[in-house]
Image 1: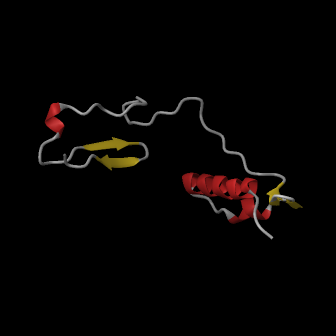
Image 2: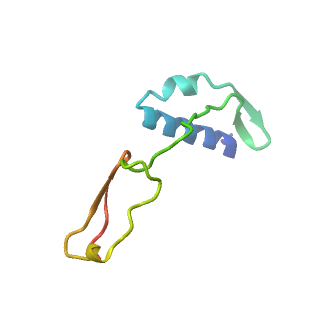
Length: 92
């Protein structure tokens, strides 16, 4: 018996949601109703993830990365902070 692509997607979605919200994945997976199909095991009640209407990728509220300027190719790498963590631009 194998997992269908839909079931693998359901697992990945549940995992992403669990990591994002720092919650346990087990209750979500235990609540699933599974069915065997010709494609493999299918989740009849897959998880859903809700996103806010507006998503800001960076602390300044913008959705685009700061532009690379001429001064960025110095010996020191520049650092950009966002709500998802800190990204360090590699040295050029």
